[in-house]
Image 1 (cartoon, rainbow, N blue to C red):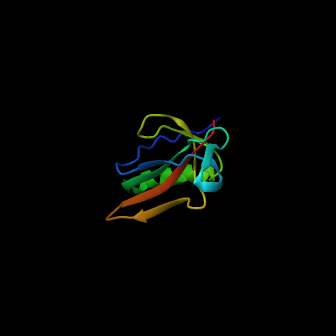
Image 2: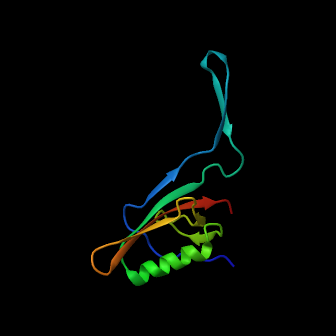
Image 3: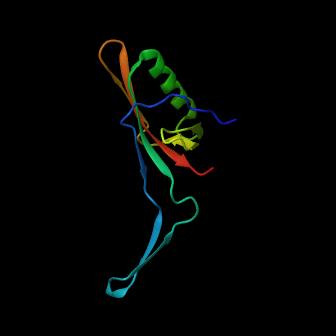
Length: 114
């Protein structure tokens, strides 16, 4: 059974899509492009969890540790389009202490083909 990530990220989280494209270059500056396989428009999110309690940060981090960077999980990003994701490597995630009992986590979620 696939786990589901349920924590809502903060505003400022951002989505990026970089299409996978094959390009063949010909003489006189001409080129031809084609999609590189199936699922060429996968999303990548830089996800921010700012000024959260230590308890929330512990739970978020425990979830990410349990997935180990290789197990896909269900997540619905702020755009509302659900998918399967991994917390991408080699960057993993960063936990930063904040003022008082608060902390922040930033990470990158990469969509994987279903």
